[in-house]
Image (cartoon, rainbow, N blue to C red; front, side, top):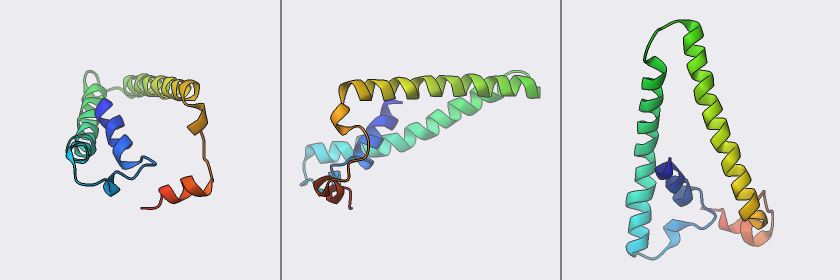
Length: 106
């Protein structure tokens, strides 16, 4: 999950990492964080598929596993949302200020 979060930090950040000068931090951002996130998604999907396919194959048991996984994802999503709102209130939401709007253009 950390690798996925780091990937989103590099790719979907308001600060365009591609505009950074060639340096060691830029290399680390792109080689480790951006590419590592794609690998982490594949690993996460594989673990989820293994978790859902392990055991008996009844429809009820499969839906129970799906609901268990969905509850866990919802819990962590809401936890991260509350954490972000509590510690970063100024950047929470969409800001249509001209300065911020131009920084999103790639």
